[in-house]
Image (cartoon, rainbow, N blue to C red):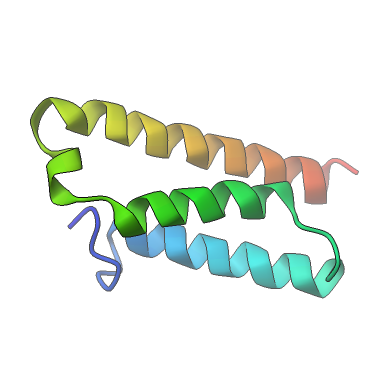
Length: 86
């Protein structure tokens, strides 16, 4: 369920939607500039899209989830900096 892109409660689904949303916001406000959060979420989205189930099994699950959590925190900070702390 972690990697299922079509399941609304999965991490992959949420990352895809967040990437799409920040892309729309970025294009609306500044079509020629790439938002830092867009890059972070794009990498996270790609990592989740191409992750293999073996990468999230057993001892690998903890580091995988930490990577997701770190990327999410970085993206939230980038959104805050770009849109709320100007």
